[in-house]
Length: 233
Image (cartoon, rainbow, N blue to C red; front, top):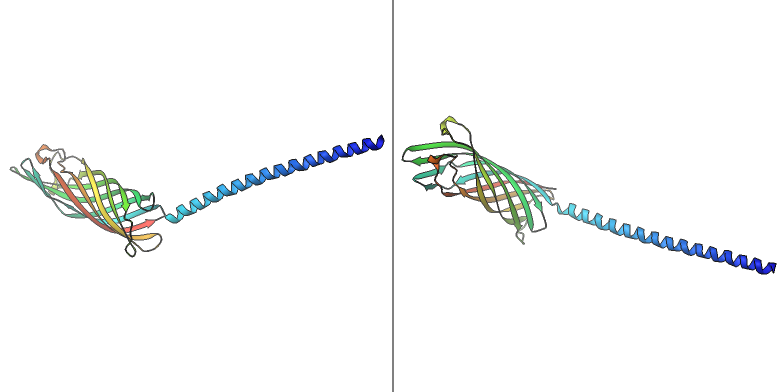
C-alpha cells in the first residue's frame, strides 16, 4: 500500500510539473507574439517616417518680382499704374508627388494715376498680396526642370503711403479680392535647394481707396513674373 501511495504521489507531482511547463510555454508564445507585433508596428512607423523625410514635403521660397498692371477705364475715369518690382515669400506643402498647397505673401509699391474731367489724381500705395493656391506638378521632367501650374485666390491690400507727391485727401486703405493663376518651373540644384522661375496673374477690381471720385468700377489684370530660390526640408 505504501508503495502504491508513493507512486500516486509521484504521478501527481509529475502531472503538476508538466502542467506548469505547458503554461510557461503558452506564456512564452504570447510574449513572443506581442514582441513580434511590436517590432512589426515599430518597423512600419520607422519606414513611414524615413520615407516622409526623404520626400522633403516642406518648402520655403524667396523671390524677386515684377508687378505690371493693365490700364483700365470706367465711369468717365481712366487709370494707369507705374511699373514696379517687389518681393514674395512663400511656404509650400507637398501632399504627394504631383499635388501641393501653398501660401504666399508679396510686397510691391506703385502709384495709381486717375484721369477725369476734373484733372489728374495720384496715389502712391504699398501693395500687400496675401494668397493661397493649389499647385499641380506636371507629370514629366526636362533634365533638372520640374514644371507646374497653379490656381487660387486671396487679397491685394492697397495702403496709401501719404507721400505728398502722390496722395489724395481722404484716401483710405482698401482690400480687393483677387483670382490667381500661374505657372512655373523649378531647377534642381541639390536635394534641398532649387532655383524657381514663375509667372502669376491677378484678376481684381480697380482700387478706388474708398473715394467715389476715383471709382472706375472696372476689372483689371496684374502680371507678376518672378525668380528666386527654394529650400526643401
